[in-house]
Image (cartoon, rainbow, N blue to C red; front, top):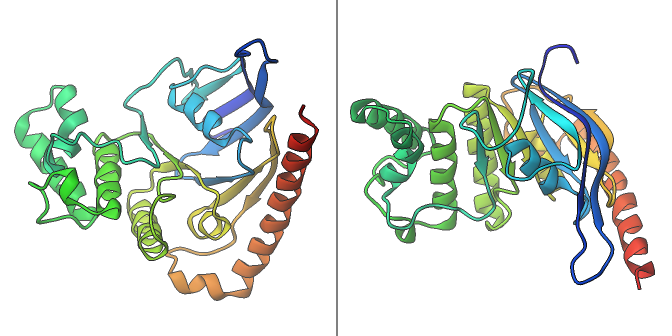
Length: 267
């Protein structure tokens, strides 16, 4: 892909042995191109290297071989050009909603007035106007994750990296958060890499869905999602949605069975 914002080339990751055991290869050499404004969802069985891939792109882990290029420059560590949102909310409990969203802006030395303007905009976009002075312990899980998303977006990253961000939420809250984030993406058009175990979520959110093989993980399928925007939750009942979900379910099931078979053979 000549216009790729992110290029992953020959990426592999092997973790050294612990306690005298054999090293663990989490990722085998794999490639991925991500265009600007893409929303890529990543599926695969547990332990296939989805989160490892995301952490390497974030600069929080280092590959064993291969390279990751953002705008043609090799990624060598964390940077404000990549915003990370985890399954756990990772908010500072001693800071208010407003202060949490401003955190990265303050670290960059931005003027207070500009911080306040940017924070107010994203707090509004995630539906938390009126909660600016609340602390995380005063918020529900879904509200805390909204703060985490607002904080990541406020820094103006080129990419948003999301590791099962809705995995700890109840079903109804999860669906609300899917619609919220998708609406923000449709407006902001940030490039997103989004790891999930939920096939419905992957199809509903993604412009492309990537399926990874059982460990050592590699990308085995890269499928465009032929669903128009803006997307409404009712699209989940359409034949097009159901057909793609069925295809992806079978692809993931094959890899889950492969992972189970490998685990059964491990002494």
